[in-house]
Length: 442
Image (tube, rainbow, N blue to C red; front, side):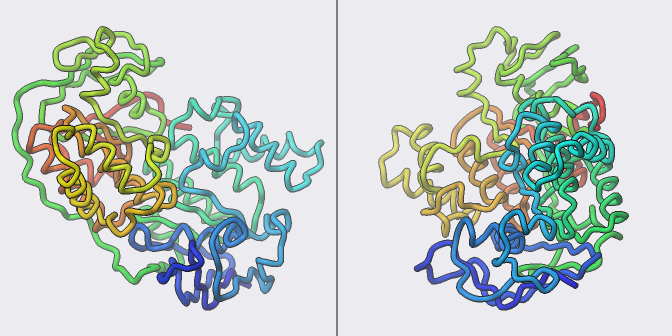
């Protein structure tokens, strides 16, 4: 009994010469945990959509091959018939939610697989209790952190009780301790897991097989950084409180690289948004010697760039090229068209997005979208760049390229603040570590 793909070839456009997946054979044995890795953009998420039956039903063309679950051809099953066999959790949980909160979402999921109405409240409570998510039961999704949303999405997936579960970077925004607890729970359950993840260390001791989609070897992050010393203070926080979260006193130097760490839901993203006047606060928060609450929002937006956890929410253009060009034109108005084009292509090549310049940003992989959002921000001349989980979805090579480029920008005076759950990156790639306490995420 297994989830099996034979001779798969898939392309998004019918007339394209290079398929996303070509002649692939793939097997996940029942009762095992398989870890799938590979370079960003190599087709991992696409394979997940194929194995779960979402493709080619909703997009693309399967030009050869067959996918069977326990001997059943998945293309012959309706969506309702597929659920007992396989479900998939997306990289971005916002794309998966249909309702306003976890309780409503669970009821919606169970209704869609024809669970008797009388049984839904009991099953909803069981699912919430299993993952210890009672405090989030009726909290609107839009108020939750990225890690809390991922936990809610996982709760809904587990409630559907499928035999095979596909997890696409399911724990990228969850703190390491909570992630290890969740992986341990999955190991104890009678469920088959295909986990798409760049962070192999988190799964150590739990996976039964490791498959690289493109043959790339797993590497340890070992980038050495010679970080300059800086003296001028650009941001200070004293007795800062936002939405009931108490922050430590913070001092950030101009041209420095700062890692913000803390449990999921501790307030890392909230701190970023407060810096651009998206949240009221108590205490003092000063940017360039001026209190943020008394600073014009337009000035803050001109001087502070931010890349959110879900970069797809901030794209403005129809193509990858135009997205970067938009920023280049904004910041280099005095340059001619030829110079702006050359600058745009230079930036795209840095992050290996030049071959995708005609793609819609929404057709890129999660890791590629994140790199595009970072490029769009560093194309300008802001004083501060805030990055929320910048290495989420990145393979080793692209992660190093991003870090190196950020290091070079910091050397020119750009102040960089990035939130991460990857302590190795935080420790090796920052002048200082800012630990935000708050209550640990449920």
